[in-house]
Length: 249
Length: 307
Figure 1 (tube, each protein chain N blue to C red):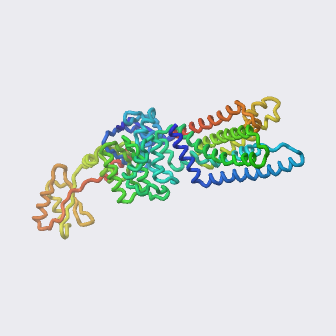
Figure 2 (cartoon, each protein chain N blue to C red):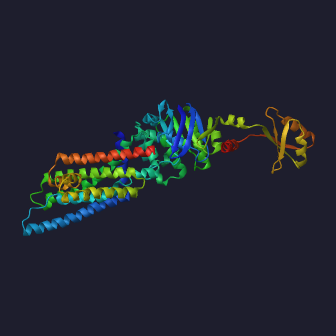
Figure 3 (tube, rainbow over the protein chains, first blue to last red):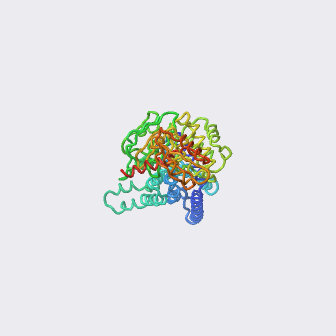
């Protein structure tokens, strides 16, 4: 446990020395802000003319989850591949550190970084609650939405970490992560709309289905928690295997 | 302390090391000498648990490097050939990070002590990216020393250092070697000669010789040699000296001196000195010529090629 924390802390600090991390954070927050403003303006119009209900936190967490599809590869690409490039892998693997401690530590460092970004985005629900919407937003929806986004981020990052362990080249890791995330977030669900049978199977694989249709709307289902947590575990396991394989190569 | 038994490592179809067997005990500095690509780094990487051997086994302090890798890694300090550093950290942060990974209590004090040992205490707040090659090498060494390892494995520790730093680093290594086991690799022969209690010469993955530097030298010298220098022209002298009993060969060197060879145990130098003085020459120098490790090395690796 101590090793995981030591590695995670170093990784977390590293993000604050890295331009890519700042660019990613800035782009996420900027895009989210623009989407937020557009949504709020639209909500004002809607409530004036149609007396529509005020928006909830879906206008924050839904685009946030989408932005993570694009941000995760940039955040995780160098996690492990860079150690290999700099030769520091030799240092870590000859220190009394197990492969899985290394991989989980790396992932956790990235996770803390994403949590910091998620923490900053809480400003939007706060503005909605205290300033824009009377008498305030549905806090249950907000909490479940944020739990959802955190779980999505954890799973995304574990996939990115595994790819960074598989590929020595960080750009290869970037594209592999992006392809996997795009596939499982958008494309894997498509057959569900066409196929007469087996639609449930594809819907289950679809990562976005476990978020958009449940947690972002305020429903926390055990099956969704299990889905994201097992995905995270799988990513970390594969990452550890990749590091182990590298040792034997 | 280190026990290596029939160690073999293949990279695909290429055999990097073949049936290496050697031992190193406590308080011994063992030098691993060989040309580039001889298998020094491979052997060290196996001993430090970075990668497993294809065949054979190795133990450090009684722990198997594959099956009890974590125990081995706790006891070994390792300086790889390319010093593994994080340029975005300060020297202190980096060493503290390594101390934390090794669960060293009172990390701050230990780091300060290690910095003092390699004379870097003034640079502890500086970023590693701003350090010179020699300083980086010393940070790497400090990292290897942090946990006071029983076994220290250093891959080409003096490479890239300036002469003053080399002398300094050698002193540090010699001090450490008094109590602990040091295995260091080098292709600088004089370094092995100065630092090591024992030298293993490795070529193409095999040990071709193993002994103390002195014995290696003695073992390979079939004959003793000496240099003679006199004032003035030595050309005539060459033929005359060849006539002295016990001398096997004489040849003149480009710098005007003569080098003669005689059988070991039959020291003809007093006779030569008497003869030179009697013949009316001014004797300037008469000194033995040792075979350097350099020559031994070439000798041994040449044999290897012929096989």
